[in-house]
Image 1 (tube, rainbow, N blue to C red):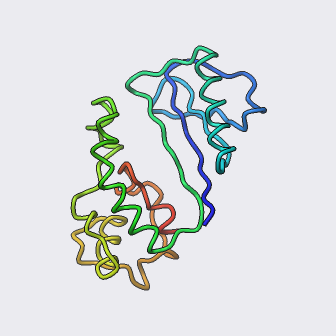
Image 2: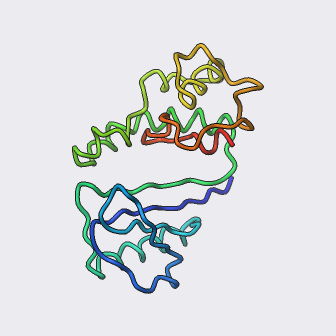
Length: 173
C-alpha cells in the first residue's frame, strides 16, 4: 500500500518570498503570529528529502519557532479497518515517548490530546464500538453501522479530531 504525506509547519516569525521550487504554500493560521507553511503531497524518500530541504530553507531564512508553534503531519492513502486498528494500537504505545519530546505547552493543551487508554484495546471484535467512540465521541454504546460509517457525514471541526492521532478525515466523509 502506497502512502503519501503532507506537513504543516507553524512559525512564529519569518516569510519565504519565493517558494514555487518548494511546492509550499504560506497560509493564515489564527493560532500563531507567523506563517503556517503547508507542503504539497509528498511520497517516499523523495518526500522526506524534500521536507528536509524545506526545513533547511526555513532555518536559513531566519524563521523563528516558539512554544506556540506546532507541526501537523497528514498521511494519505487507502485506509481500511485493519490499518485503522493497528494505527491506534501502535500510536497508543508510542505516545508516551512522543509526548516526552514535546514542550509542556504542547502536551497539556486542548488541540493535542492523547489517545485514551480504552482506544488501545480496539480489535477486530470490538472495533465498531470503540472506533465509533473515538471518532464520534459518546460513551461507546453506539457503533459503526449504516448511519455512522465511512460514507456518513461528520462535522469538520468535531471535538474528537483534537487528538494527536486524528482519524476523523479518513474515517468519514
